[in-house]
Image 1 (tube, rainbow, N blue to C red):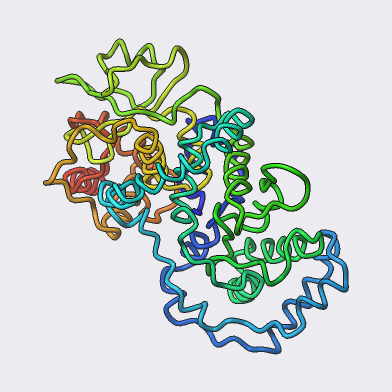
Image 2: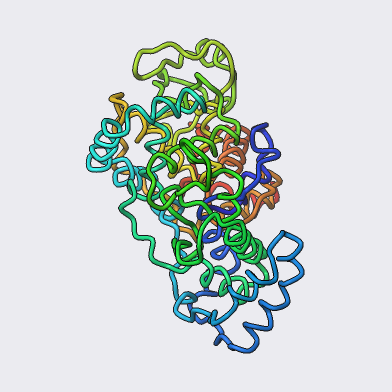
Length: 421
């Protein structure tokens, strides 16, 4: 999961104002945000200092309900994992061009897997959709994105990984919180220590839940007892749906859809209600009507020359699973394709080359210096940066004002900054 860098300051979306980032795979993004170079040369792990650090967590664990016996038994023989600190924290959903990421994430092989799973688990998916209000294609797509329909390996000892990360990265308190949450799971007999297997950052099972997310969202498909997100597909699907439903999924509303933009479109706004978008000449690419009510953001991932989408309120719920536009858009499109709806109709432009990370940071710094942007200068282009680019384009009569960061926009920004504008 990802760090709330952009969304924490992008307050135009009411769904984002109070969202909580206790999500699957959030740990890897937080580790990356500490320092991109921190993983390259980790400090040696001192065994005595490691155990002293963990022992100091005893009051926190006891306050969370962990018994002294479970705490002592878990720490017995627990050693840090030095190899973990060499783990690459690169996030392709932020570094890879969206259309390249989409080609893999929602490609034919994964769509075929999803359709097979849809047939195999049809009755369970129907029951889950009725109860949660989350469409079965979205649940399946999230399963595919998170664990490749359970084919992604789950080999690491989650307790050891989280203990190591908590000790080695004290400036990232999430790891300490998740380590204690894992102890709570053991104490409540929700999973044994041996069953707590997952990714290097502590994300577990088919939904890739962190321990705290498991405690909050994991549910049994039927019956009582602990949810088995490692080997039970129905439990995993029900847990994914429960996460999205409790995060605010709106029944009957799509995540979004591709639209055609009329010639000469002015790009004066990137956020309007559906009636306004219809009045401005936008149409759904599939010919279906717009939702009767609500609002949406206009998103052109490759600029005005490429495909454009209206992002509905449920899109921002998908981003609670992973705060990346590449991830959320791919999940939505994968769900569409699994359900038999077409993917992206308009061709992605071949000439478009996204800015390199260093240039994206320069862009954000210039936007901030000119008063258009108040977020982190982390090189991650999200809604806050797009909104800032759009505002700069509109103010300076740059067309199309599509919010897309290009070398031309960057050059114009730096020229304006140098001129004191």
